[in-house]
Length: 189
Image (cartoon, rainbow, N blue to C red):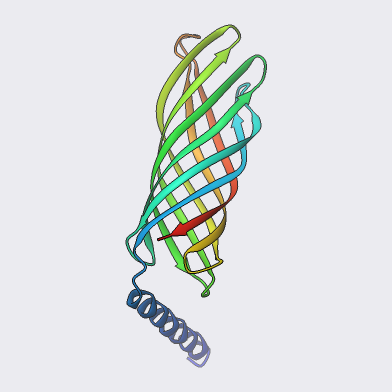
């Protein structure tokens, strides 16, 4: 039983600290609109000729329901990727649920998951085409508060993107993953 006393005491201290942080955060009005943007590195991983590294640009609009939960939408340009034999360009829109946990007064960690609706223009050999699809994504990152309204962030996001090139062959579904590492800024109103 004596072995469990430090564990129980530590659990009580952590629970008390969490309750205090939660009560303080809830007392403040942390809800509201925010806008932001990200710029970063995109790694396209595929079984086919679409493997590539690229820049990615993203514009974000969100609404914080409270200190911990937000709804977020974005427009994202994954740029052009591939080789001379097979290349593509993908853009899209996202909708996500974002959860945030304050670590200190100036540092927050967050995770988000949602849906990507994307359009891809492709060229495979001499065949060109366009396809629309939807994919799931998940990401995580860290925010650094510069002021109460301005935050800088670093994040990693994974997108499960499939490309179907209908006019190439009967079995032309390309399994790809987009891996995005980016830095950005967020302004909370």
